[in-house]
Amino acid sequence: MSSPLVQALPALIGVGVGAVATGGTTYLLERSRWRRQQATRWDDARMRAYVEYGDVVKRVSYLASRIATGRGFQHSVDQLEPGPEAMEALEEADGARARAWESVLLLGDPQTIAAARAWHVAVWRLVGFARGQLTAADQWEPSIRETDLARDRFYYCARQDLGVKGEAVATPAWPPESIKELTPNDHATGD
Image 1 (tube, rainbow, N blue to C red):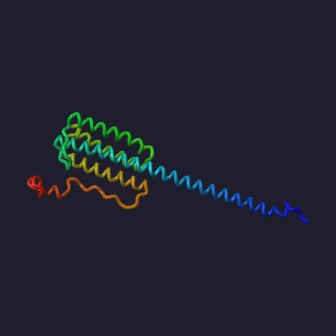
Image 2: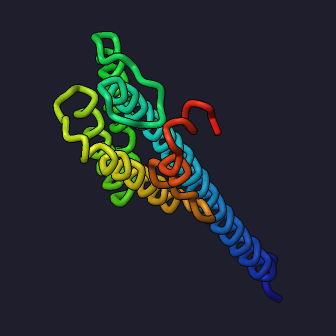
Image 3: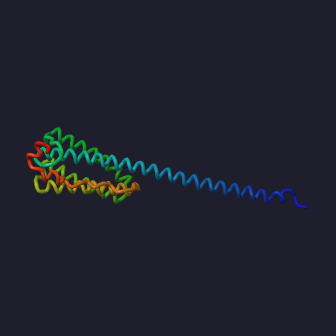
């Protein structure tokens, strides 16, 4: 006759194997869940960084365009007199851009970082017009278009990095054909 321990041995082995399998499965599931949570957390942080950066670069671009319009360059924004207050607002906006840039550098993928940098360089040309450093009227519209294309590229890369499905809507060329075709009287009357 065998001892009770020998008779219980298969059951004990089964319980041990079951415990190890349950523990291993639980560990793998928890590790997988933790990784998904971390990925979601970084995706959220990256999205916030891209949105904030986009917002402040657009603010710099808008202010620069308004000030350049105040210097006589045509654009579809209200002009802003290029005085000390306008220049201070432009400097403040660029400071916010520089702070937001750090988050993009930390969290962004290489393509989006490169696109963000290209957008800033394009906007910097508009800032040059706003400050009176660039004065060639024939370079104003190409600079506006370059800025629009760089912005579109940044958002394309950011969408790719974040896994956003669908196509982004491209920025139309400026000035729109409908505005180019208007006569001076049409502008005045709104026809």
